[in-house]
Amino acid sequence: MPTSKAARPRRASATRVAESPRDARAIDVGVVGAGYAGSAAALFLRRAGHRVTLYEAVADPGPVGAGILLQPTGMGVLAQLGLLDEVRARGAVVDRLRCVTTSGREVFRLAYGEVAPGLAGLGLHRGVLFDALFRAARREDIDLRLGVAVRGVEGGRVVDVDRRPHGRHDLVVVADGARSALRPVGPPTVLDAPYPWGAIWFVGADPSEVFRHELFQVVGGSRTMLGFLPTGRAPGGRTPLTSLFWSLRGDALAPLHHRLRFRGLQAFKDPILRREPRAAILLDQIQHADQLLFAAYRDVRMSRWHERRGDTQLVFLGDAAHAMSPQLGQGSNLALLDAQALAESLAGGGPLAAALARYDATRAAHLRFYGRINRWLTPFFQSDGAALGAMRDALFPLACASPWVRRQMVQTMAGVRRGFVLADPIPLPELG
Ligand SMILES: Cc1cc2nc3c(=O)[nH]c(=O)nc-3n(C[C@H](O)[C@H](O)[C@H](O)COP(=O)(O)OP(=O)(O)OC[C@H]3O[C@@H](n4cnc5c(N)ncnc54)[C@H](O)[C@@H]3O)c2cc1C
Image 1 (cartoon, rainbow, N blue to C red):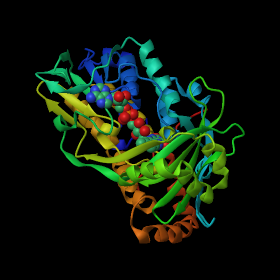
Image 2: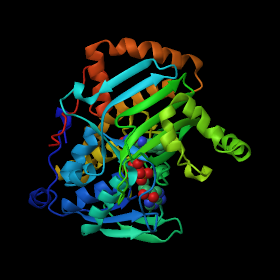
Image 3: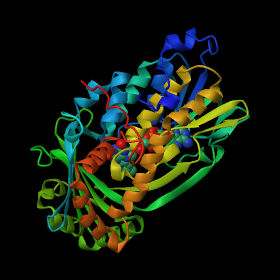
């Protein structure tokens, strides 16, 4: 995992833990949440020789949700876990991001290949990534506790919502997502607020791949955003899928359902068809309002990511540590990178607190950059700011005219930037 020179961690390996005279013992780790961050962390840490217990609130976790865009950074982590080939086999190659206005004028077209030939993102059904990580965790000697909703760490033990005590761990990895139940016992939170806007999602069959090779968005001011993400195939499925998303304020959801009840689903479909007639292939598959999923976003920023509670250290990973809107398609990738960086920081040896300080130093620039740019960019695409959409439509084409700025933008999209101008990007992973 590429990192700044100041805090370059060493590779995680079982031998490293055993060889180091300062940390010859393997530590006992409790991981809370079997999402992307938690399952990846459990895998890395178990393979590095630590004892791992993985707590998951859902008793029978399974693939749910719509599409995600996996970036080269996230693919690099999967390659290190030996899972990239199986995930890639079910994904859809996404070469570029293209955005047009409702009148058809191009706002930007950013191709991954502009920073490295052959570079691409991967459109994925969420369940494919979940399945790959969770099944791999099941194959390891990891103590899996399903149906345990953790609420905190008390008297050195993990405690669930019914106040039942569970394991005692040297390190608790908190990876329970954007609405983390453990955030109150973590480090000070600088920001933890719902974003007023979210999106309605639908994943439909797209057998002739009408939407392929690009994440395509149609925007109208900052209040209208329609998007199409090629999503590959669902776990066990054969048909290519496309995810459709339609931007909506959270408080407009109930009025929308009310409208649909009285005017029928066409009231949802018509505004979309007016903006993109090719959407018909997906919209024709929507027969009931409950096929539409609404996803809300949350902004979370912590002052640091680790905290000591008595004899237990806590470290926050993934959305629990830094939830953000999906505008830049980075959340899953950041979660995977967190897991890899944590394992590498522990493999560096020394006291646990020092290893966690190393983790913070390793992740700080990357996470701060994506948190900031995401908070800065999202209102240009989803907000009530009337002038922001017009500014976006005027400024993006100008910015894209400069090859240097384009390169920065594509690197940002690929997930490798660690700062606005001078910071070295993360080297692109070898993906074969
Ligand atoms: C609409 C939408 C689109 C997105 N698109 C993209 C994209 O294109 N690309 C991208 O990279 N990211 C995208 N993201 C972001 C991405 O989904 C998240 O960043 C990612 O899922 C975070 O993973 P995580 O493991 O941190 O958290 P989660 O995936 O939320 O996993 C948390 C896990 O913890 C469990 N849990 C919760 N509470 C407890 C508890 N108390 N005790 C035990 N277990 C618990 C949950 O059941 C869950 O299994 C998108 C997000 C949304 C909402």
